[in-house]
Structures are given as structure tokens and as C-alpha cells.
Image (cartoon, rainbow, N blue to C red):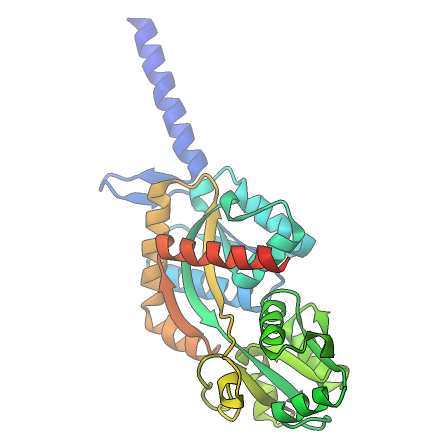
Length: 321
């Protein structure tokens, strides 16, 4: 009898330990709840797009009581973000470990090697960002038509952008134009660096998302000359034509922003976080203070749809690599 009691206690303790390690639990109300802190990793430095969306999510989720557990945000850009990705993938507290993840991060992950989406649990996509081509207002060119005319005359065009989604959309643009040999792509660590290079006339074109270029366009320092989108952007980028307006097929590679979890995250936790992030995306703070302020498109996708989009992007990134 005593042995049975001891065995029962041991089984209970092991089960409790497993729940604690996962970072989640079944509460008295029968609902899944996060236990302890939520570790939310960002694979880039503070102040960038990934950091902003992460802190916006955690702020809204906390203030509105969507998630009761406290969030701890870790900025871990080492190894081009690969260290933070590996940390999340193998996290012991799998149900309460998250990673801010974008199509740009996916491209960097593939290029660094060693990890794929199979090492994570895709959770949600929350927003999308598209790109434009910009020129210096005091530079050699004032329109994309002038740039293409220069290419026809044998001029080499220097293009600045990051190694992630800007590089992918650049390759797509060159393929459509059929003039890849005429463009030299120069990689910068961030969109702000490539715009700084444009302002210094170190490149002829900078490929960037609207939010990073907004203040410089308003100030008249740089000019949007091409919308890498199927439709024109709103003010102050509305003067930039799409490729189809110039006689080509439109090219776009929306940079989605979302969240993924640890590989061993439970199905219950996946459902919990999908619901929590959906509630965050429906708040006025998210719509007004984040999407509109950062010139993003609302694009909530739950685990199944987000996973399909992420894996499709992974295949495209692997093909480009």
C-alpha cells in the first residue's frame, strides 16, 4: 500500500514538473494559462522594427489583461540573430518562449544555415510591409524611367539594401527587368544605413520600407521613384508608379511580421497564443498606434495559415540562397 502511495506521489510530481517546464498549466477553470514569465526574444537590436512590434505586443497584451503573465523581452542580435533563434527553438519552457519573426529573419536564418521552420512552431502573422525604390533628391536621377534610360546607355547602377527581404525583392526586380548585370547590390545592416548611404550619394537607389524612409521623404531629401507593389502607396509615397505602369509586370515581396514559438510548444499553448495575438491585433492601440504610425498593413493569420505562408517564403528563400 505504501509503495502505491509513493508511486502515485512520484507520478504527480513528474507531471507537475513537466507542466512547469513547459511554462503552461490547466487552471481550475479548465482553460490553458501561462505559468511564470514569458520570454520574448528579438533577434535584432533595440529600436528596430522587430523590437518595436515586440514591445507593442507585450504592452497591449499586458495593459488589456490579454496575458496575465509578465513579459521579459530579450534583444539578442548576436550571430545575425541565429543565437536567439537557436535559444528559442530548444527552450525548456517551450510554452512560454516566443520569438519575433519576419520574412527578413527567415531569409537570414536560411543564409546562416542550421535551422529551418521545422525547428519551431509557427504561431501568427500580424502585419505586412512592402517596399519602394528611393533616389537622392540631389542625385543623378529623379525617376525610375531615367534610371532605366541610363541602364540602356551602359551605366552601372548601385543599389543599397539589407541582406534580407530587400535583397529578395531586388532579385525579383532584376529578373523582371532582365538587367541584373547593370545593377550592383550593396548590403547594409539596416534600412537606415542604406538610406544614409543614399543621402551620401554612395548608392544611386535605396530599397526600403515606407516607415524607415518616411521622415526623409517628407523633408524632401529623398524621392520615391518606384513602388514595389501591385498598387500605389498612399501619401507621401503616392507619386511612385508601380512597375506595371512602366510597362513591366508588378513585383512585390511583402515583409510579413509575426511570432513563432519553441519546437516543443504544446498544441494547447499554440492555441492560447494564437487567440491572445488575435485579441491584440483587434485593439485600437494596435490599429492606430502601431499599424498606422508605422505604415503597415493589417494581416492577421492564425497558426495554420501563417505556417503555410512562412513555409512558402522559406522555399523561396532557399531557392534564392
